[in-house]
Length: 134
Image 1 (cartoon, rainbow, N blue to C red):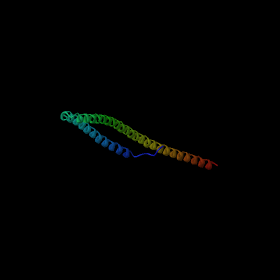
Image 2: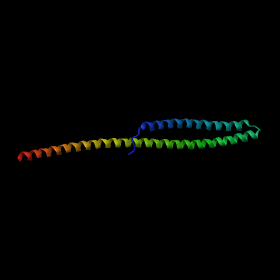
Image 3: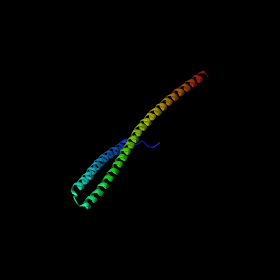
Image 4: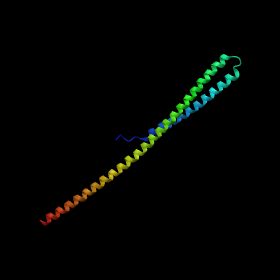
C-alpha cells in the first residue's frame, strides 16, 4: 500500500488552481468586452474607410473566437478542479479507513496477547497441579 500522503499539499494545489481560474475568467471577460468595444468603434468610426472596417472586423472575429476558446478552457479547468476535489475526498476517506484498520489490528494483537497469557497461565497452573500430585 502506498505511503499516506498529507492532504494539505493537494488542498493547496486546489486553492491555487481556483485563484488561477478566477484570474483567467476575469481576463476572458475583459477580453470579450475589449472585442465588443473594438467592433463598436470600427462600425461607428470607420466612415468611408473600408480598409479599417475590414481589418477591425477580422480582428473582432479572431478575438471572438479566442474568447470562445477561453471559455472552453475555463470549463475544462472547472472539471479539472472538481476532479482534484474528488481525489482529495477519496484520500481523506482512505486515510480514515487506514486509521480505523490500524486501530482494529492493534486491538486484535492486544486481545491475542492477553489470550496467550491466559492460556500460558492455565498451562502453568495445570503443570503445577500435575507436579504436586506426583
